[in-house]
Length: 154
Ligand SMILES: Cc1cc2nc3c(=O)[nH]c(=O)nc-3n(C[C@H](O)[C@H](O)[C@H](O)COP(=O)(O)O)c2cc1C
Image 1: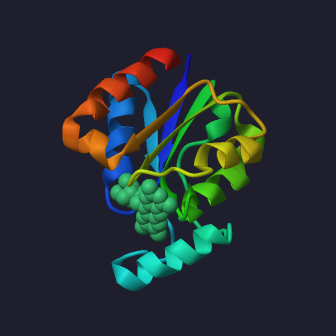
Image 2: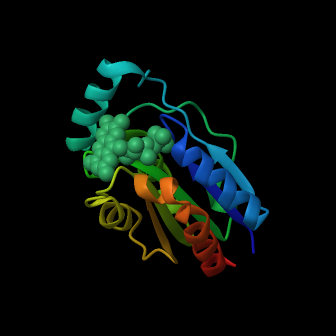
């Protein structure tokens, strides 16, 4: 089975998780990049507002075609209790190409409607979902949870 792991990450947390998932599945991965700068307090504030309003953005071109994979694993940080703007944009752009999906999110402690919204836009039930919050990274529970998620995707 062919799998692609895609993720957006503003500060590296979701990226680290995406890399581990792809490594354990021994599959392709792609980080998605926004053309808008999201750094600093202003970037944070604008991201917060845009995510709450379910806005889209312009992404840098991706290199992998999600349509050729049996499974696309999509990762996003939670923003404003919802999907981050770049990940929302990616899902909207490619939703018709996904054969099967799985979702993961990293957050401070409240993922809100992130998974429900991803499922609604994709129009598909995910094969598995993984939510990692700040305390999981502190306690070291992240590795165990990632392993459990990966096992469901094998
Ligand atoms: C704009 C913005 C909004 C956020 N909103 C939430 C939120 O609603 N709930 C939550 O638990 N964490 C929230 N966070 C925290 C991030 O989800 C968390 O730090 C995440 O792990 C960051 O991932 P990254 O390092 O891949 O960017 C928010 C962070 C940002 C930048």
